[in-house]
Amino acid sequence: MPMEPAPDLNSLSLADVARLLAEKRLPPVEQLNPDHCGNSDMRIARDGTWYHQGSPIGREAMVRLFSTILRREPDGSHVLVTPVEKLDIEVEDAPFVAVELKNEGEGRGRKLAFRLNTGDLVAADADHAITVREGEDGPHPYLHVRGGMEALIGRSVYYELMNMALNESSEPVGLWSDGAFFRLDGAA
Image (cartoon, rainbow, N blue to C red; front, top):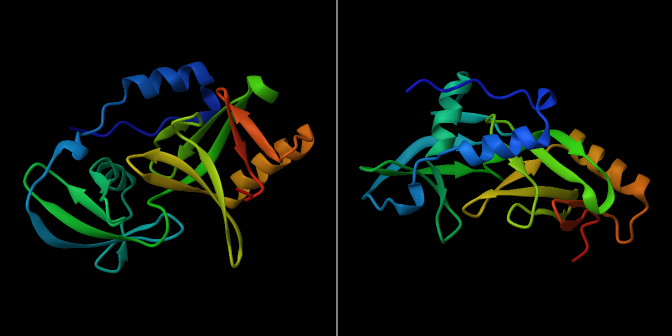
């Protein structure tokens, strides 16, 4: 089954994004329970680069395909799951990176959508929350994707979000998307 090219977020309205999200069908990895077969010799680096046996995977379609069978286990580890095998995969931070932002509206009427490094689209809402956790090296913003997996929000995208929030002068600092408010200042 050939993978379709990743959509161009700039050419889509958020209504188009919602339609594409409704049409997307991922393999039911959360329902699969095959035997654990070992390690995949794969790693997802903090910057979202996928590696196999220490070498980057250069084919975007291959990365997108592997991302559809990725699952987070209850213990926080990640595995690649098919109907017949389950293989460990190392994830340094988050398995995805939000690399592009689409904004429509403002204030409580705003809607935000993100394109991930895998080409997936995610609309921020109550089920796909934006969170910011403070680290020793500053804030770490994330977007919930699915099944306990998150996307690290890329630095330029986070700056874009913060700029919008600061321009709105909301207190606390944050943004609305699809009826949900997300704090961007790292406070609980």
